[in-house]
Image 1 (tube, rainbow, N blue to C red):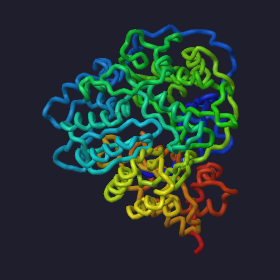
Image 2 (cartoon, helix red, strand yellow; image 1 turned 180 degrees about the vertical axis):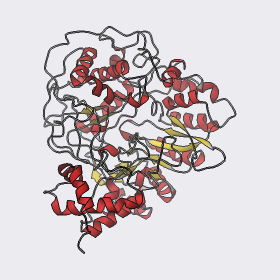
Image 3 (tube, rainbow, N blue to C red; image 1 turned 30 degrees about the vertical axis):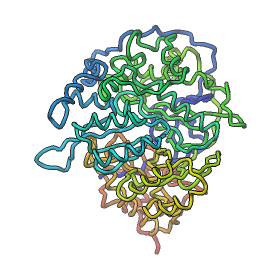
Image 4 (cartoon, rainbow, N blue to C red; image 1 turned 120 degrees about the vertical axis):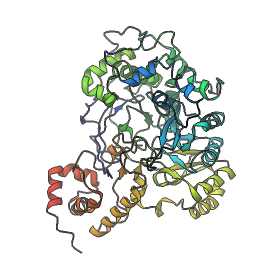
Length: 591
């Protein structure tokens, strides 16, 4: 088992509305004041020089770039008739699985083929479906539909993901069309939830009636719409070509169609993506200053909405005026589309393009697709992790209630009770980036009865949830994920109990915590790279030796930390050589 207590090392381009492009690192879930000043291992994005316009231009593209060497996935995409063939034929066969090409294509439709890796003597194939919910918004009708589908066609549980979506496990191939069409017809979608394109766009899950939060969520919706596939392959496959798309904002349509700086494929059904789509998955988050509930720096693009003292988004405060945000996001995506590596998928994320080019060249190319220079940055306040657990006033007379769900797994009595409450009070819900759920628009007179019913099902108020659990995350991993090389979700409960026991042994208080994230493979779906020890600290520590490594560190953190210094900040200040010395010389804590 691989256990990750991780500190920040991840790469992200942070882009903001009326804000700047930045790259930095976070200490655990909150930052120090210099969070945007450093240069991380993939290259730092610092301030942008003011200028009126770009000095050069890029001609409009007409065909996808074709490097001399391409991965087999690139060839599959090119020959697929925009993500249709051979998936459309494979779905009609009697076999329980689809072939290798179709496995790659069905990801774009929001699904992964899986099998129970603990079975011997054969493979029982099924499919995981992932929804796409910008800002984590889930209408009442969609929640009830997903709850039903989990029982009728899945394994009886729903999974809340770290990108504010549902995962539905265990769907058999012959049921795929029924399940997909049910989701589409009930205000949902799985389009682009997986695959080489923009994934679900994150935004704070809190349903505050505040102008900055509302604008952040609106921006997330618009970016999601801008970068949604346009060629119709999804609806052709699952609802026989019937369109269920909602009306798009005029500014989204205008930004998508604009080709004044050579961003689009002319006369293509996919004006932004073309036949090849992106080299690899692409992730975007939107938030407001201080609110790091979205783990901003783990995304390829992060958008920070900056407002004036009255809560109105300013234009222009500097950086990028709000009316330009879609064009700026599009320019970054197109830069990655045209120049990201397509020969080796291990190095095809945008962070590797930044590392290869350096930030100056990257910025120059993005500005050409954008059509102007970015404006200089301004300082942002410190970031804070906000869980939104417990009861909060929305600001419109109603309340919302955030509920902790261990590893996002909703099942058993918890699932039954949530269904009853959501159905009885006709509540909309939101999924948080920390795998939790928020019940929205609750009247004051409902609070007492809802609290009582939820507590009886184990959905407790945050004061009754171990602080270690509140910030912990794990991906599903074994037995179903085809990428997993070790345990995560099934292993984290015992790990947290052992960490709590170590805390008690060395004398740390109950309300103190460290950020523990366990991931089943290096892809890091549980975002382990933003927890409290991230870089490779010790090689292949056996799970039974966990206490030998961490008890000395927790003990010395308790003795030697500075005021309000988190465990991650302490380990960073000490350095790895000193930490290894503390472990090797540790003789046990005094009773």
